[in-house]
Picture 1: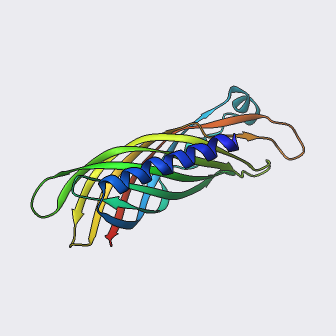
Picture 2: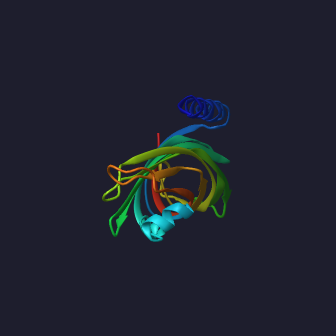
Picture 3: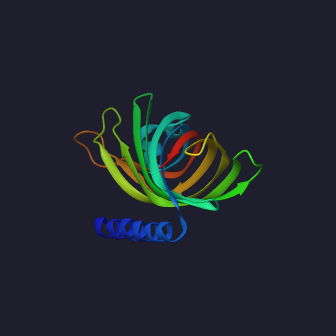
Length: 202
């Protein structure tokens, strides 16, 4: 599994790296803040053993911080993003980390630097559960998704934006009370995130 993930990460980096060298003119870096909600699917064993716990409420409109860097030109941009999200509810605790590679195409709306953007994302999602009374468990899964939004150039180097991204993933974790065996598992089916961002070209 680790070998497969390593190969995927290297392949993704090479593809995005080659594409940015070929098509982009300016480096940029940015920060994002948003709110993420997750769709969690539970095993029937987990529902039976833990009384149908509500995992969708653990990461629900939870604050999400991210950093990203990439290259762009007038037509679009390629970039890598790292994001961190965590949440807890009624003793249930989840932590999610995203490492993503994305491409957006630009559609200019006027001469003032206002652009629509839309594109796709591939990457990895690390899901960790550290709920009360159970052993901590971590898993890394694949992610694929789409994003769209509105970008406004502030000046020659700076821009701000707002957008929405939807990710489908296959990350999962298992639940085993301390001193006992596995009682079930959860799957992170999807994540949805509204976000604001600020970028600087250099």
